[in-house]
Image 1 (cartoon, rainbow, N blue to C red):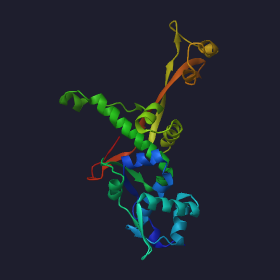
Image 2 (image 1 turned 120 degrees about the vertical axis):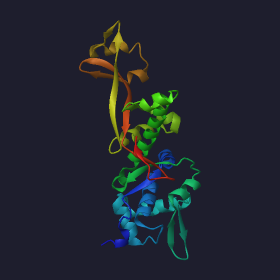
Image 3 (image 1 turned 135 degrees about the horizontal axis):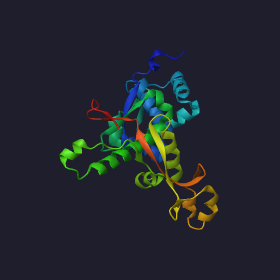
Length: 256
């Protein structure tokens, strides 16, 4: 039986966007999960006995050996501290970690603890939501104040792999992986296609061999055959389900 002290104190946590982006870039998934869960089961300090390590292991679906290894990693990051005299671990507050990681932005997103085992998806959705916010601002920029109040932004926004790699410095493989993961619980997406036209007529799938001479290998990888017609696949469009807040004033939040 697990002790009552291991019950979750909170069901959700407000995580800074830039911290989740750092986790994506440096692939600190398991460290992030453990740090978040430690905050959720303690008041900031904890002894981490065997039953508590077991709880972390079972809850996060990782071995006890991995949990212990990642706790050492968290000590190295200074996201947690340790007092060898009292044998207590000190779980740094979110705002303390913001200072350690030199995070200036206060924008943050709520993570419900029931989704903690989909931390990759949450971090990916954070990046996608940041791109959506940027696109919204560009669309409304330059409008008169009256027009801006009447502006109705689109529901979905195109998010390309290029934007994930160029803006956030992710590898192509990492960007592709996390973009797919985001759709499990945190974003909705729809595919976009453009018909391939030649001489005013859409090409059929039988003509795919013909277009090989006119397209690069990279362009050919985006060609799709749908209902016997050829299409070029465009970047998917995304809609975020995340709820945003600010660390300074977490009572004000909204969907993006």
